[in-house]
Length: 506
Image 1 (spheres, rainbow, N blue to C red):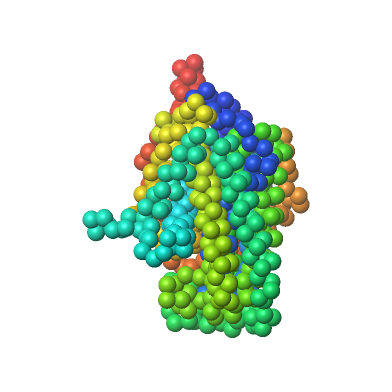
Image 2: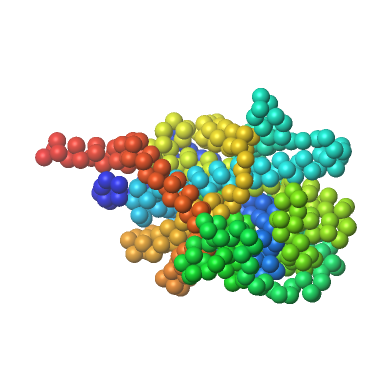
């Protein structure tokens, strides 16, 4: 038996066998194109429409384009490892399932708990951003006085976010294939708008705006200092992480948020036809497409506006987006088009983040680490109960709470997952060299080691406060595991039954 206690591992064969249980079976109807659509749908959204301009103004200056390159390289290395795992273990749950097969139940639970943080916080935060853009569009159409947040009984209620979550939760319950078709239409629209930004913006680029490409370091008051300073900057004795070399590295760790999404593709492996071929294509294809678009867009925006004008404190409302660059040049009609594109873009981001959250919880519930009833699928082959639960949680968070600046909190959890997946490739290659792998990471162990190093490097460039919040969330997860999950683990129950049967026989 493969390990006992908290280090027990669930074999790849058992994970695949569990996908055939009638009550928890997902429908296989996705192809490589569907997966690429999901990946592009979730990655082209909050990062490109809101993060690009703000990171340039507040943290990295014109070198934000280089920050996207650094983050993209780290993601590409991790993506290769995800592709191998997803083609070898085509089961819902992504990094959680992969970790269960390599590191054991406890670390699998930790990474699953970590993914809950990544997807739920990101979905709520992006839904709040969607509501802001909805209000801008409504004001453009109907004039001032339209607000997507109203006060009821002294409590602010964001009805825009609530409307979005309800509609998307319904779509996901009706079927993943329908969700993919919806994503295809919306994704095509926002890719067209991103291309519009690139080609339209080129005419307004001033070479002077690229100088200095890496601005001299600045403490900018209290920003980028203390617990808001990057951990690496603190360890290296830096005075802050705004602009300069530390600002470039901190910017790479922040714009990493824009790449979150290709790991969602891996969570749908169980619903994919021929996953050994289609999942790697979906992961690597979507990542390649968005990296090119991100770097091009960031170069255009940084060239259109002096980076000082993109700083948050340069705007009374504290918001800088792609539309800001065109408004700066008086091209308001273009800014309005971008706002509509952002509204469409953020829609699919929230939907795919919710999809990823649902599949991770579904996998954990099927293993008994969460209540098994949550894993039951409906007549359409979707986990209805999990869908409803995720919809409620995200809706409450997005409707009643201020999402704030949560990108870094999402990033630290995702990078941690990437590190475990990359290390897991090395472990599984050694433990199970006999497994059929539809895709193999080239140059092992070099690529997985580089992936681990790159992700750890980005984690070190996140703020001290982010690390403290992450450690508190992980500590809470450890408590939940030992109070509930360890005792209710389906794998643990099987091991106990086998031990009892063996003892009886003897």
